[in-house]
Length: 102
Image 1 (cartoon, one colour):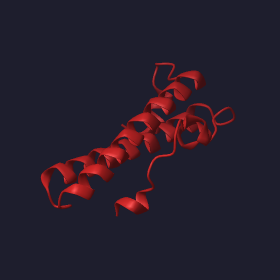
Image 2: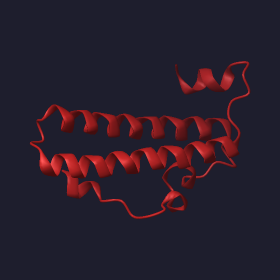
Image 3: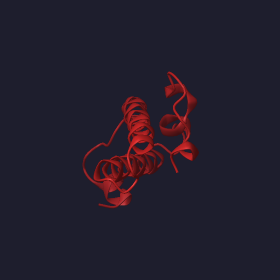
């Protein structure tokens, strides 16, 4: 479903506050997956099914984050901010960089 269909549907969409809550949740999910990826792919061959699945899961969460951000800006072009899904406000602790993974 395209973002335009979401915005033009009869449903009201998400509030800015709901996007902020989702942003925190998506940040935590991605951080957990990055940590798992570093651990698993550091201990097992990168072609091992566990490694490929955790990489696939992380990439899916990253696509979800991007899609949610796009929906937020379509619904709230003035109130929406990049920090909602990509900001430092969600970071409780630093996670390993993706460069360490690849």
